Image (cartoon, rainbow, N blue to C red; front, side, top):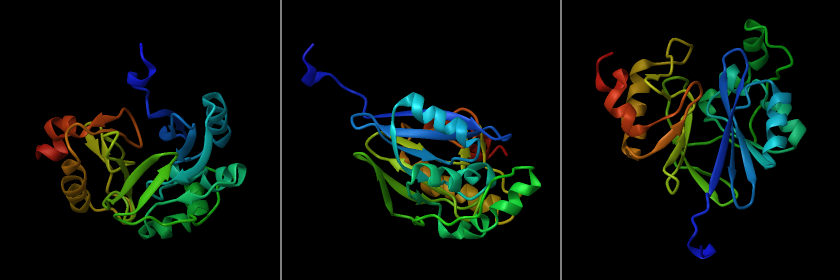
Length: 222
């Protein structure tokens, strides 16, 4: 087979479940260069570092979808270990990152630290890893500063806790709003297209089309 016509994968990803919340810490990389990003290192940093070594990628950034403890608990520790910048979430979640220690204490999570990212992200911003570029969608509701990372070329998104397979993010935490969350999903995520697959913060991923048809929070059954 002629190499020039062979379609090689442009990206790879593995999920590392972390913390008692089984949060989907995601290692995502640009396949040709092996340049990678760690999305939502919520804790269990040695486990994340082991996965990085096993995958053989070179992590250059940490991205955060939002500020809840199960998504950011290991961010400061991992940043120091890898000496890479943290990008995200939206500045509306600053109060959460300012209170990581007190939040962790409520769940018995020690060794976590309050921190600020190297870059806050806003609607319309772009972030990149290797030659992969992701657009930022600000999708409040689960938390005020939740963001979604969307790659148009790959037809792929990382949606954090905004949308789940068959469900949506909880909105009973401080700063949450169910109405705002549903608006974010319907105005920001559904228009991306039914063919867009996504990884979420907990559980199995899905596609926009699957959720548009079957998710009771979107179809109006709940």
